[in-house]
Image 1 (cartoon, helix red, strand yellow):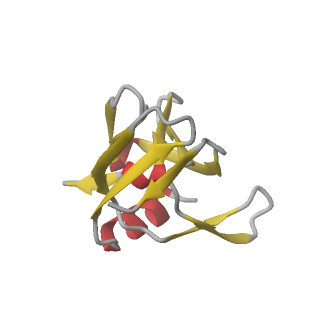
Image 2: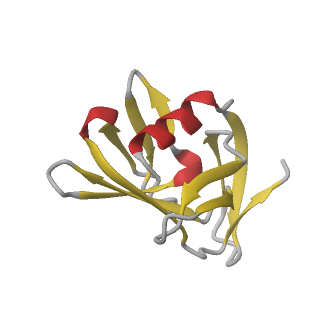
Length: 119
């Protein structure tokens, strides 16, 4: 996905509160998700692909200094051209990166055992 595609999808989404749980019952977390239901991206061959957003979707952003930043996609929110999101669900740590600093964006299903739960 291009940085512009990421910006457009997050910018046009309506955030909503969600709760997630891990299959090993390590507790639930409630947070404001970005509200993206389906993620439009391309595979490594350039073919259009749509991923269903879930708590296990991970995003790797490479900045212009070639440093990698890892986030959970559903936690990414946009404010004043800065993306902020969780990079650890267990620790609850957040990271931020400016849109202007993004070089590449990779999205993948990390197959983590997290799932949404009804509140």
